Length: 266
Image (cartoon, rainbow, N blue to C red; front, side, top):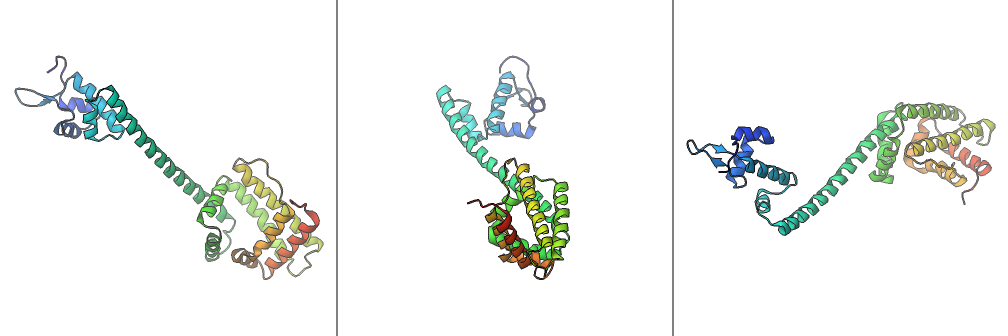
């Protein structure tokens, strides 16, 4: 036994922050074998044991097995370096896997938050309708694209989403009252102009919230493409929710507006 202060199992447990059970386990496995008091057979540890225990705890944090640690404690410099290099490679792989898992969780969290913001726009519409439209959109675009779009909305504040909803509802309700009027009439085109600028403002808001500052206005082709989304079942049903004939009325008004007021991107 080395000279110097001796420590009981409970004292070592407190000093090192490990349980008595763990120390007994290390003893049973031959990893950290204490001395024994000759009169009663109790385990006792000296300073050398404490230093060795610190090494063991470090190796355990690095995810080495007990058998690997036993080998490491008796390795020479070159062999120890090889073993640590191999273990480092394993830990890096695990770190990358964990990083991917964390990223996946973050995307899911952002998607959930974005969906909450998105649902603000439709909170006045019966839930069974919005659930149907969500299902149709998922079939059309795939869950990955939906999640990506929702994560972008997560960066926009709830107050901004509610402000946009107020503007959107105002224009939508006013436009619904024009169903049956000529799509080229002054009032219909005025409302279409408001819709066009409102769409640009919202696209810019979302983009800037996600760190993209330079966002061009919708081109002629972009706005016509938006008009033609009424061919999608979920968009058509959303439009028709505000009035029979709304979808086709909006399409014609938007295309007329685009052809006369918007520059081509081509």
